[in-house]
Image (cartoon, rainbow, N blue to C red):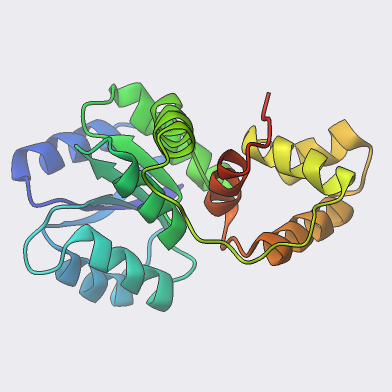
Length: 215
């Protein structure tokens, strides 16, 4: 069972989403709150698997809450719900450690898919997110994420990186490349060290900014 927390100050939206998701057989709504401060306070006593986090909230907004969650509750995964589709929001939140980014105007099925993907693989990139990062970040060059001065990736590491960007799990990558899951994890860790990326989202941004072709 996936335990969710909802953090959004728009009561009608939050309650509607709670009713919708509460009907899913593999999801339970642990609690709801209207700002980041209440969210962090409640997380101390009521841990969850995933937080659906709004960006614009009073007292403590989603951006500040994201940083605190990463520092104080590193095992909690976060899906950002927002009205913003600008690359500056998406890329920055991915670099901060968001596991997914979904527009509030998305269809319910997309939110459900994001929850299950994040619960299963740790991240979710909708077509919208990929499109914004690719066209807005790479072509327009409006935002330049910072990465470590990376050592060149080996051919095998590039193969693994491309498959990570396609949202394949460690087991699926191992099967495709005829490797053991432990070997794949080793390559993944080496890629993180070489690029300076913090997580899978950072690796996707890295691949896009470096012009690495992802089928």
